[in-house]
Image 1: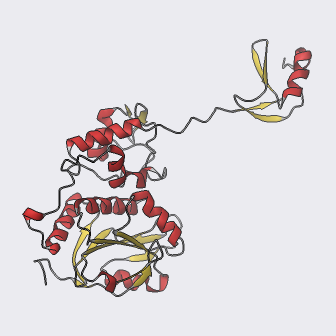
Image 2: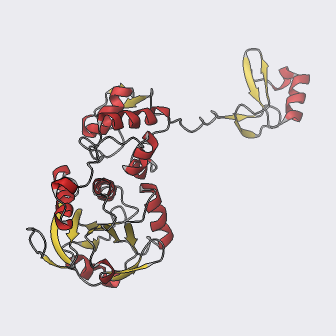
Length: 330
């Protein structure tokens, strides 16, 4: 048995389809080192952390033989298309990440076999309780480690233990994620780090389009300008300034990026533009026909004695223009 890691249990048997409809079994994973976790796509608490950390480990350990397996605990909702869309939010390369559509009959036994918990709660606001850990499985199908996803040191240890199972020496260890990369771009880093996985979902994290230069209200009521220093701090120490209305669950990327990569990422965030602002509209009543309308820049209007009047269309505006005193409010 390779390495000095303890043998905790044998991984259970399973057979489930992945996000592309391809079946995956425990036997398919023999001869591969693999990492497992339990998630569901509607989750806004532990699961984004699990997926973000999963992206970190994938980036740290580039060996193409390593597999990453996420078991959905919500098979009724997490259909194959839903899992496919979820994967695409987090990474542009799903070749090593298999998101599996489980079933309710076998889910509990599967989780227990992987030293984890996956149970429905009956609470629609928080429908499932499940472990927030990663399980490391060796080439022979034995569980060799358990790692908390909310502890950065545990995630680093997982990366090291994967290399240990692979038999990597210091000389041939995987390139550190913080090493310089001449091909890196800010946009590529944004995708590789899984940033878009959270920031594309407003209920999980603030959308980043147009954030640079804006004023941000923090959880403690302070306001700060989202300048370059703020963006850097938010990436390296996100818990220092948590934005009001969002959970403070973003992981730190300290030690994951070189100074050059951090600069590229911040430059990319500064370049993002927000969605075009929606034209402001007001409720108004056409003074001629008395119709209630939603008035905006494209609405027919007229000025009379310092007041703006809005109309349902050109005919009412023409009638008003012929005798504004008749229709104007006193």
